[in-house]
Amino acid sequence: MNIVVIGGGPAGLLASISASKSKKNNVIILEKNEKLCKKLFITGKGRCNLTNNCEHDIFFKNVVSNSKFLYSAFSEFDNNDLKKLVEDNGCLLKVERGNRVFPVSDKSYDVIDAFKKAINKSNIHVYLNTEVESINRYDNNKFEIISNCKENIIADKVIIATGGLSYKSTGSTGDGYKFAKAFKLNVTDLTPSLVPFNIKESDECKMMQGLTLKNVQIKIFDCDNKIIYKDFGELLFTHFGVSGPTILSASSFVGSDEYILSIDLKPSLDLKQLDQRLIREFENNTKKLKNILGTLLPNSMIDVFIYRLKQLTNNDNIGESFAYDLNKDIRKKIVELLKDFRFLITSKRGFDEAIITKGGIDVKEINPKTMESKKVKGLFFAGEVMDIDALTGGFNIQIAATTGFVAGENAGYDI
Image (cartoon, rainbow, N blue to C red; front, side, top):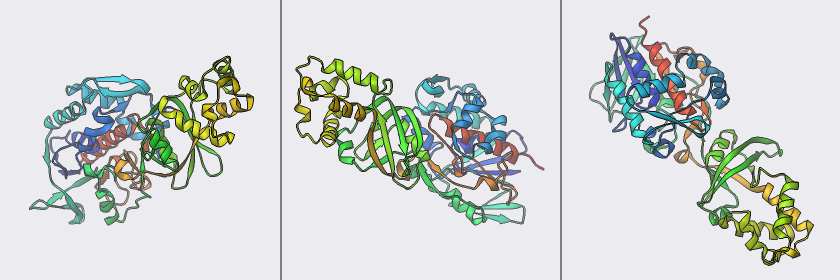
């Protein structure tokens, strides 16, 4: 039986590995790039956050869209199975903060080499620089794959694992959506996710460009002043706005409207405790406020903080004021600003900066136990091309691997 896997990322590779368990199957991977796993190579800043070492219930809580769809698949191939496959093929793994799993070497290519070793053990043929142009029904129960190769390929089963629209330079150009629509399958709205934010106060962000705030709490408010997301961790200022782990995860919950980002710079202290600290800092202190703020804030944030404080106090010389001259009302405004430092989110950045795509092939039209289309027999889907997305922390690669494995396993059955 001829099984064609379109896409050579984690989803496609796991699909081909599981489909090749039966020696009767001839498994072919068609990859448009010059190498496999081009996007995986750059994930995690080149370190490859392969998966997350959490329990199943925690895993599903980190899946933002259609987590229930994964229940059956995850019982077939979970994070422990993925770790075992990679380590059995020569790549040792380690667990870091937040249960994130990385290769011990901190090199993504070691994970990719492990996948390649697994491929080489199986009856799998890999064709690189092969771009699929269309998939057509052939003789009712087969498929004709038309690509830039000289000859068309006839397949009994097809697994589409082409990824989404994020990082187009890695080959993620939305091919899978085009193929699905040609078969009259529904594709939900596509938006960039796990992506930085553009901020209205970009001039302020530019003044703090490169600054990473650690151990801060963020809250995202919608237009009704309702909290839609909150998190604790790191935030990075850029020339256009904000990024970092907390922001990327927050983007999964933000639409096209404007939102408020609130940063609690001192989450370990409540208002009263923070005021007491200011009293201690200011008491009998002959320094100016701009100099004292260095004990509370990173240096690159002080000018922006003082600018905000000028607006709150209507005092253009507040930064030059001596500590002993600052009254209770001034302290209150400083405390409030430290606990609620706000920015206006105007939009998300585009697909070129997005880690994943939100939206995709409607999972209502896919069998969750097999990953086969409910409308087109023999057509399977795996990975980011489907309408499933999760937060940062290794969850999305695991979803790709899990759905890929299940798709390949079921496509490999000759029923």
